[in-house]
Amino acid sequence: MPPTLPRPGLHLPSFLLPSNLILPATAKRSIQSIHPPRPNRFNYSADIPPLTGTTTAALARKAATTPLRTGALATKKGMTALYDPATGKRTPCTVLQLDRVQVVAHKTRHQHGYWAVQVGAGWKHPSNVTRPLLGHFAAHGVSPKRHLAEFRVKDEAGLLDVGEAIGASWFQEGQFVDARANCRGMGFAGGMKRHGFSGQPASHGNSLSHRAMGSAGQSQGGGSRVLPGKKMAGRMGGQQVTVQNVKVLKVDEEKGIVVLNGCISGPKGCIVKIQDAIKKPWPEMPPAPRSGSEAAEPLTATA
Image (tube, rainbow, N blue to C red; front, side, top):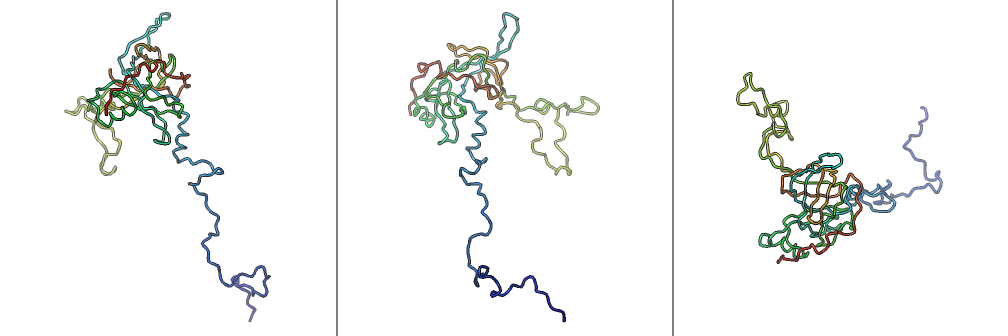
């Protein structure tokens, strides 16, 4: 009978092993893992890169495109034109007027998660203001405003004092701004007006369906349903439209007039939010609004 070779699983007797390799007879139980610990993505320390899914990282990504100072609320008065006396060139422009624009409140990083300035414009009788909002105005020492809006700023340096007035001279001639306003509402509109559909034939057997939308989708091949986002008839207009890089042509501090180049969305009398353009170099910031504190209204709100 040939000799049997030792199997791989067999171990040598303990008296043939060196003393430093002898294992204990009983295994020690432990909760310690034999694998190295995995890096914790929620760990905050100096030796790991900052997390990209936090609020701090999100604000850091937006820091380059966040304006350094607040904007203002203005009322659209209409459009006119300016003529160059040297060349005779006609430049269409939009006239905006600032009406008693004041800083109402602040939004801070530690309390609200971001830096912003709440700005109010116009005036509203205290009897037409709800009591919670009336108390908000009274707590900050500002008269009731008809319109309120927030303007994001980069850091604490962009926060103006509460109650400080913002005049037309807050903007400089030649600088660029971004104008936001709600465009003119068209009401319920059909597919041809709302989306530019070409319509159906005017003849050749077509009757009473010349401006109809037509098919809204396939049957069995597409799930017998209307796919989300299908262009159909519905309410047209009335949403906010931003016009970027609008040049400031004229500024009249006495009348509170700011003249912008070109057209701005919205009808006459609408509220326009104007702020420094994020795609242009930041303008030189004045130390404070030139209108001064004398333009601020006395406190008339009563809670």
